[in-house]
Image 1 (cartoon, rainbow, N blue to C red):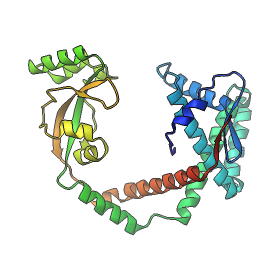
Image 2 (cartoon, helix red, strand yellow):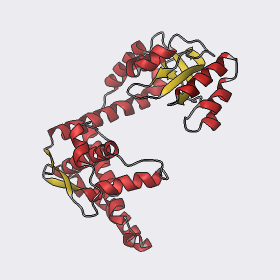
Image 3 (tube, rainbow, N blue to C red):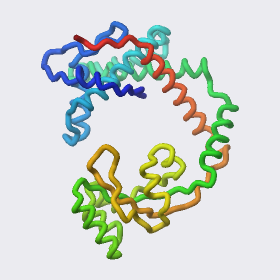
Image 4 (cartoon, rainbow, N blue to C red):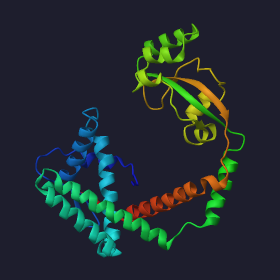
Length: 293
């Protein structure tokens, strides 16, 4: 659960690589230091097996996450949710188990414990918020009706992509496609996308054109005119990059909205998550966030 503020200023004070912990920012008077941020960076790099590169942009994003966690933790404690029996018992039980295994002596334990405690508090905060502001059946029905209007007469497409930042690769791929070679084989040869050998450049998901039009109009404009089995005859440049894409419509079908009874719980969950996200965003917007000097 993250409410990201994209602020250029964050990058400036999120770059610290010092071995000594330095305060990066205070959130309502509570400090976030470079040690916490460095740990997040190192954890993500380890999870990516070295594929993720450290950068000011990554650090700014992760610092935003730490700020969000700080404001949620503060609000949960203001509401005394940390004193609830369920929260205390789960924390105590987890700590007792960790000590019994000797995990509390291992490097990084304090970070693992802090993350576990945060998860307990955010769950308690979410439950408290939704108990006070529950999602009603009427809201779910209205949301469903809005979706019906949004998706009316929309198709859904399964897309393939050939991606490269080398124009010569894209042109070679287009020439091969014009020569009637299969899209999968061409993608495997020319695309730089991850897992292209396994997928042949084709995503398993089906994307409603109505969503693409609203959220990624540059993709919608490229693929909306295409029928099944057709591809963009000219490369499309990803906005603000030098990367080019050839889109291919592997399948195209009419979008069918499932009956309300089948999706009611999922829609309820979506509305609950949106309510929670909005509440967290408001907490962050009201917070006094002061970069260290």
